[in-house]
Length: 422
Image (cartoon, rainbow, N blue to C red; front, side, top):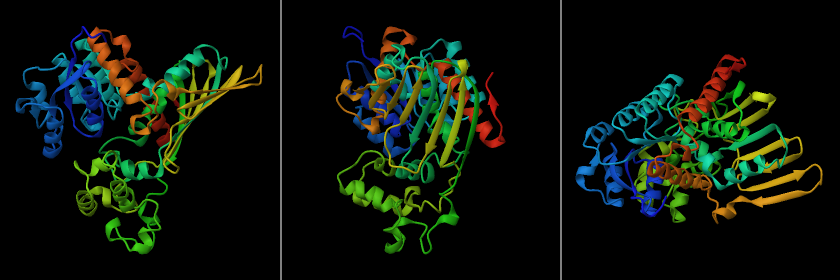
């Protein structure tokens, strides 16, 4: 984007964690874009967001209906509502001619995903889905290396999504994505990133999928003897021996001076007092063995792409939280990466080259998806400013294809059969 172009104006629909994250890029880069409106049903969150971005009262709405039916004041919208509330605002925004950046997953069902694609295609608006892994410095460097023939032809891949033990407990046991009926299957809610990324790296359509997984650990029958249903009232000898203790996780972060994610999900202004109150009364203070969660806590997916390329993907919540890990096997070399450092072993020279891809950005931060959050918003704003949808790496058709991979994997997991995408 050149300085001669005016900043892209954005209406944010949903001031939760992801909405705040994407809007913060505009606050830090006002020459590229600026927030001109917010729609958020929760009053405290809405007021805080409006104050942070200096919004006038007429630019602040309690619902997306009001925001998208009001006189148009923006070039684009960021839609970061809960997963099951994506379709209607996306369709209405497209009708109004807004360019759209939509949080992943696109929608919980294939039919809803196709309805969104139809709406944005018919309206002719620029559309991107927040598959942030495509936009990281790591992925850019990896794609360049593979295109240069660093490992020859890709034969197979192994990819691990180490969700992290406390992240699993926060988001998928206690949190918003714990129940399929209220959000979506975990493979869609968390790991549609990964299947999308595998499709992007391989560069070939997926043809067949199989999958296995279940909710193994976070169940009532695994609750320790004597444990309470809330961590703040749990006997000390039990609570102190539990790695999933909410008091340790959240109050420990506040005690260390942390006020960002995940503690800011519990309360808009985290303090010892406000977080303690949230643990006593809200969903994040529940024992992980006494929640109403039903999504899987571990899953594997096997994929066959055109040309006979195979991939295996593992998602698990039982690990130290860290970057994704990938092993790529090629006809001329072997590549291993931890989402930051890439190591390439060359069969001919028998030498290993190491590349630190974070050097492009100077830092590497898991909370920003390794720079992918900023990369995504930067690309979307540039596409809108230039009127060039090719600047977006995760447009409607690309996203629909990778979502169908997820839906096929879920069919396979539930039915116990290989699912075909042909």
